[in-house]
Image (cartoon, rainbow, N blue to C red; front, top):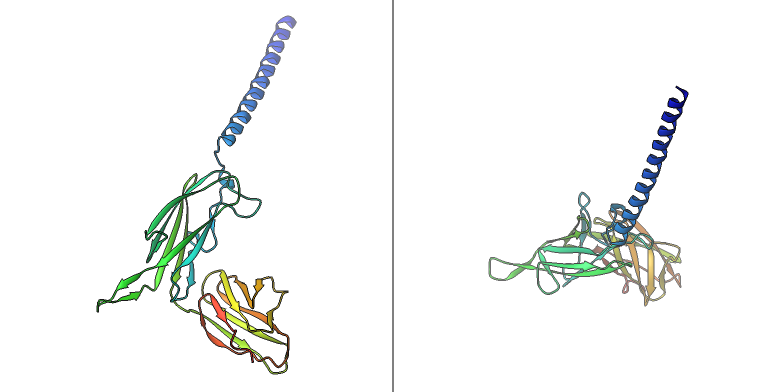
Length: 258
């Protein structure tokens, strides 16, 4: 009986050992397969980034005001979220425009964003006119831009651009003070606003929303819908600033200093 028991125990031990070896081999094979899949360019969902400066994902359609006199505006498509998160496969995409055209006069284009590094694809959009009853043309009030990734994953980005001066600004200043305040009431989505200043006036450098000050111009990054203030520093207290108007994406105060 003891011999039979020992034989059974030895057989069970051999089975456990064999099973362990098989699992180890299976793990090695699986790891090798995953590595080969990765090397062949297959991308996991968490490493896929298809983004834009102005277009947003479905459910969060972005809306912007643009200058009614502007002949075109530009959106950008990206294959990254930031410097560390970059899509490691080529992205095939298509862009369609309602109420306008893209470069070449078409209402849609297709393209590929190459893998391997951060890439930016600028898309120029030209607003269209529509026939008027009297035979002339009138400007369409709204342009819709849709960008879709086709491969390796599907994702849709959308933006609506209204040809209106829908934002408001006002300058508050008092004689004898070394600073004025520019208040902006923004009714559209996140975007950059160009601010032109008179000589002797600069934006507050401590404001992280302000970049690229040069030749009396700077860029103010609006986070989107809301009211924002920018401090303007004057080289001389007797410089007077004033202004109040509607705007789309640019504010010109160059003539207000005096």
